[in-house]
Amino acid sequence: MKVGYVALVWRPNSGKSSFLNALIDEKVSIVSNRPQTTRKSIRWIYTDEARQIIFFDTPGIHESQDDFNVRINSVAVRSLADADAAIRFVDASRPYGAEERKIDDLVRSSGKPTIRVFSKWDVAEKGREAEGGIPLSSVDGTGMKELLGAVTELLPEGKPFYDEDYYTDQDPHTRVSEIIREKAFRLLSEEIPHGLYVKVEDFSEEGNLLKILAYVVLEKDSQKRIVIGKGGEVIQRIWTEARVDLESVYGRKVFLALRVKVDPHWKKNSKLVDFLLK
Image (cartoon, rainbow, N blue to C red; front, side):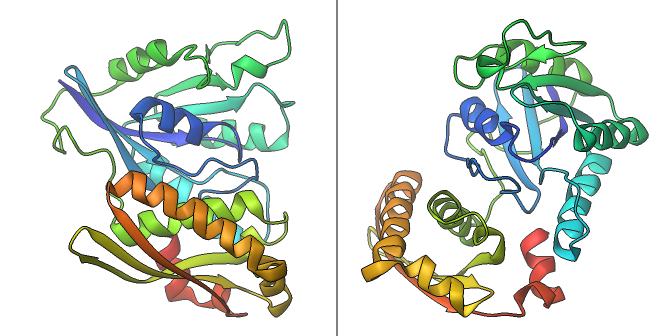
């Protein structure tokens, strides 16, 4: 069979996570209308009788001089270097700009064989052409089969690295934190999500019950009031939506204790940032 690693290279909010979720048919990656949702490179594994493709789910590449965001960009660059091939996502619903040209230069300089796809094709401007690429929609399935075939052609033959029922290498703590962070991204005002991370303090099993203690960690005291909300309304919604997803993922009842705390220096903690981005 064909087996190999494929880096997903994209501008933030270009439909990459929706593609992965549709392809693997699991809730595997954060889907948000806010940019720069993905922070680390995670492997998602697609296996059928003909191939095993290990996708590097990398952060979107974007223009920023902020130290934290520069380090996020470096995660995507490292993943591209380690891959056998790349899929270059172009958001068909947005104008082509400086970030897109920067990504093109990066992909060219890597020398990796690359497939160009035009994502969100279902909402692209009428009459737009997919110049030199594959039109792709995770909503109606346009281009999915063609893209899988094109990727397969680029991969070497070999034995699978993972059992066929594996679809991610995420550890449980990371999986839980990403699910909670997705809910925070969706429900909070624009400036807050990029100033938070989720720390899973405890993950334990008690019979058929999964017990989780997690903290939403913020940079500022002023953010805490917003995250908690009036009468605890916002954090309650984050808790409820996260627990529903966790019970679906793990197939058991989940007791989730979700708390909020402030650490104004967390982005300057190099060991913590290394852990969050590794």
